[in-house]
Length: 161
Image (tube, rainbow, N blue to C red):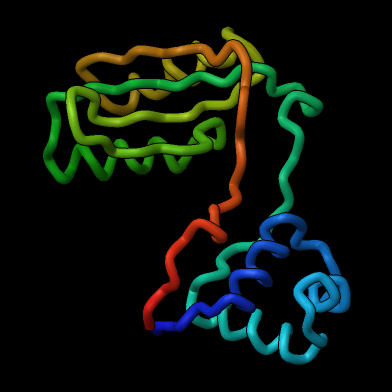
């Protein structure tokens, strides 16, 4: 379903990105509208797939997940069977927060969040026991400088429907 996104939709989306727990009244007040039109727009955006899963962001360090590793993977395997096994291995591991297939020298990059280096090693050993990889490089993040899930809606050109 294609949907036209206008300025009011962008304001509503920006508010939802900022704090999805706001009431409809709060969102309507912040975007200069009333509750019913805001609710109708949110329903339209959900139906169109613009708004996906709604969740809560947890503080990983407060919960003891103190280490973030970026894992660079090179493989010489590119068959469909290997890819299916690799994707299943990633999906089965909650430590993998993100996984991307890349263009260039590195085939995949993973963002892996674990309690410590020992937990990363257990993750690594389990992964390589399930799928063959040519080369794995793990980079430990020393400091998270910026992390956001928010899209830059104000900088975006108008969407065409």
